[in-house]
Structures are given as C-alpha cells and as structure tokens.
Image (cartoon, rainbow, N blue to C red):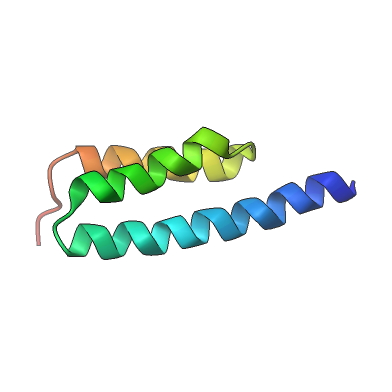
Length: 68
C-alpha cells in the first residue's frame, strides 16, 4: 500500500510541475517545449490518471488553438 501511495504522491508532483512548465512555455510561444514537458511525463508516469492528464494536454497542444 505504501508503494501505491508513493506512486500517487510522486506522480502528482511530477504532473503538477510539468503542467506549470508546459503552460509557461506555451504562453511564451514555445509549443515544442510545452509538448516535451508532457512527453517527459509520459515516459515515466505509471499512474493511469496522470498519464491520461498528460495525454489530454498533449492532444490539446497538437490541435488548433482555442478560439477566444
């Protein structure tokens, strides 16, 4: 049980940091760098929820920009 909780804690930290960096890079116009943040998460993440979050963000970066 400790291992499972540890994976959730570490995954939460990892996705939170990556989302912050992704948003900063995206807002600065660096879409390649923003995509790489999510790819880095997907390369190591084992928690399905956090993997899904990263995949969704990556799809959003690959699609057309949202209309204002």
